[in-house]
Length: 459
Ligand SMILES: Cc1cc2nc3c(=O)[nH]c(=O)nc-3n(C[C@H](O)[C@H](O)[C@H](O)COP(=O)(O)OP(=O)(O)OC[C@H]3O[C@@H](n4cnc5c(N)ncnc54)[C@H](O)[C@@H]3O)c2cc1C
Image (cartoon, rainbow, N blue to C red):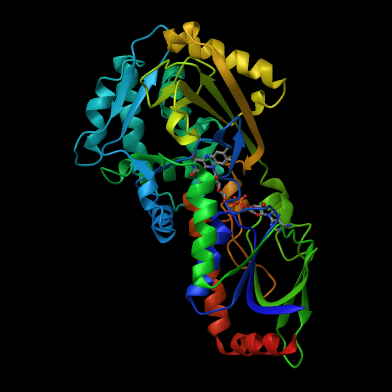
C-alpha cells in the first residue's frame, strides 16, 4: 500500500487544477484517472488520419481562471481569442446579421449591434434592450434567482418568441447547455452579466487552435509531472473509505482500485456527479445530487472535399443547427473543409442512427451554405455526450454542493459543484482551486497537520 498527503480522483480540468494547486502547496499528490489520458470531458480521437474533438469547446475572455490554467500548462498561445466579440447570425433565406461589440464602454458596447439586429423587429430590439437593462440590476450571487426559470422571467419581461430564439436561446443554450426557457435565472444572469455586460471585452470568444487532447490532456500530463504530481492513468477507483486514524479523532482515507490501495490524509473527488455516490461512503455527499440530472451535447463534424463557406464561427437561427464552426485547422485537414455543428441541450438528437443525424444536419447546412450542394462529403462523425453536463434548470443551484463534504478529509470538485457558473471549463477550474484551498487550509490547521503526519507514518 502507498501513502500520500492527497489523492485526486479524476483527471478532468477540475482534477488537474486541484492536483497542481496541492503540489504547489508542497503536498505529495497522486492523481488517479480512469481513462488512458487526462482531460476528462475534453478529449480527442483519431479517425481517418484526422484528429476530432468530442465537441467544440469555446470560452470567453472573462473565463480568467481557465485562461490562467492554460498559461500554467504552457498552452496559452495555442488558443484563438477574438480581438472583439463578433458573432455572425445566419438563418435560412435571410440576410446574415452581426452581433459585434463596439469599443465601449459596457454595456453600451452592444447597443449598436442590437439596434441593427435584423432577425428582430424594432419593437423586439427595444424589448430585448430593456431585458438586458433588467438583468444588469440582478445579482448573479443572489440565490433567490436560482428558483426562477428564465422562461418565466422572460414572460415577465414580455419577450417575444423571436427574441427568445434569436437572442436568449442563442446565448444561453450554448453556455448553459439547456434551453433558455428551462435555464435558471441565476445561471442566465451569471452568463449575461459576467460573460457579456459587466465589462466591455468579457464576451470576446476563444477556442482552441489544436485538438483538445493536446491543449489539455497532453499539456497537463507534463505540467503535473513537472510539479511532482504522480499521475496514474487507466486507474479506475472502485471505492474511497474513511478509517479512524490511530490516536486521533480524524480519519485517514483509503482509495481502492485495480492498481491496489492508496492511503491519504485527504481525497478530492473530481469525478462527474452521477458517478460519485457509488464511490464514497453513504451520507458523505448530499442525496440532492441525484436530482441534479444531466444534459446532453451532440456534435456533428462533416468533412467536405472542398470549402463550403468562409464563415469561421456562426450561430444559426430558424434551423435545427445551433452553432457552426470551421474545424478544418483543428482537425488537421489540408484540403477541403471540416464543418462542426454543436448542438446543446440536445435530447432530441440522442435517438436515431448517426446517418439520419448527418442527413438532417447536411440538409440544414445546405440551407445556409449554398456550396454544400456541390460538395462531396468525405467523412462525417457524430459524437453524442449523453451526460455532458448537469441540468442547469431552475433549482439546480440549491443542489450543487461546495468543496467540503460531511466527512473531514473528503472534498469535491467538478464543474457541477457550487462554482456560481454553469457547467463550463471555467467552472471546472474554479472548483479545482476551491477544493485544493480547503484541503490546504484543513491540513495546515493543527489537528490535520498531525493527521497528515500520522497517515504518512501509518502506511
Ligand atoms: C461535448 C461537450 C462540449 C462542451 N462544450 C463546452 C464549451 O464550449 N465551453 C465550456 O466551457 N465547457 C464546455 N463543456 C463542458 C466542459 O467540458 C466541462 O464542464 C468540464 O470539462 C468538466 O470538467 P470536470 O473536471 O469537472 O469533469 P470531467 O471532465 O468529467 O472529469 C472527470 C474525470 O473523472 C474521471 N473518472 C470518473 N470516474 C472515475 C473513477 N472511478 N476513477 C478515476 N477517474 C474517474 C473521468 O474519466 C474524467 O476524466 C462541454 C462538454 C462537452 C461534453
